Amino acid sequence: MRPTPGFSVAGDPEPGHRRCSVPRGSALGADEGDSPFSHQPRRSLRMRTAVRPQPLGAIARDEPHPELGGTDPARLKAVDCMSQRVAPAPSRRCQAAVEAAARGWPVTALHALSSGQCTCGRPECSSAGKHPRTWHGLLDASTDPNQILHWWQRWPNSNLGVVTGKSSGLLVIDVDPRHGGDIALGQLEREHGRLPNTIETVTGSGGRHILFQYRAHQIVRNSAGRIGPGIDVRGEGGYFVAPPSMHASGARYCWLSHHDPDHIGLAPAPVWILSRLAQSTERRRLLPMDPAARIIREGERNMSLTRLAGSMRYHGADGDTILAALRAHNARYCSLPLPDQELRRIVASISRYPCGSRLGERR
Image: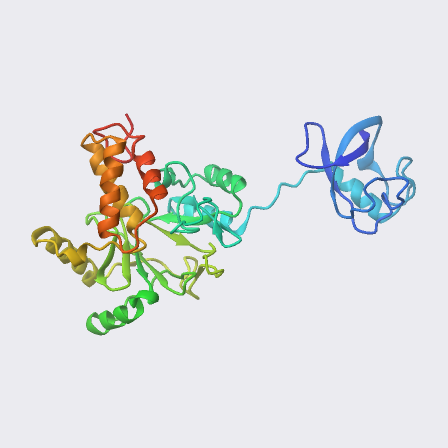
């Protein structure tokens, strides 16, 4: 037996309340004298227990209902929906995050774009819609579907970040045509042969994210321009923005046709790419640094300055010392220096770790 409902405007239902959608133009509440909601068709309504019980589920289609009066199909449809509460469907980005996690790829929620601005709230944000919005950044990345659902219920429009490196088994080649990456890659393919067919995305800026298997026995770190101009690498400690995230340009990230994870598997990274990265690392270790090569361009400023701050914190530096060093490094080496507010944010984040501990360690 159920009580006859009374109606009130719905937010989330309180205990003991159910939701009901009233179709546009239905007889239920059509008389303005009978219902205060007649001017708002299709509003979600909340039902409160009242009056005496009625067996609503037992109403026959050809029998009048004493409280609702008559057998109007719209009324009966409205009554039928009282018996169940339908949870809101997850967004496309949430579904994509759950699917990525099911493949063993740790994911994290990234900031989104609202009216062309990053939801982090910083007008001068240099990575709009691309940086993690959780407190510990990539350290919070997860494959737990419950955690993922929690993030996207809290931030439904979040962009999707997928972690690279050993934890996901992903090595990503980021080709940016705005910096000549497509031309450089074409020259490398003529020299070494075409890249194998593998999973690939088209970025919101028109670039490419080419996904390969990450070899656990060979550590590959993030880098910019080591393979060629406009070609970055995302490996250990990195991530990439995944479909169907939204770019600041208004375009979506998407899977390249027939190169999505449902149609093709990950190819091993070409040996010549790994060799080129290894040779570049060795040259950087042995040769004196060319001042021009130390210029930090957009896309790697946060990563480079955070690494410097983490190293200083590990060796015992306090927040003021780290901030002074970041300001000097930022002004001298960054092609477009980060705003001071961003430097302070990096210092605040790093200072949460005790001296002598590395990023990700807990004491």
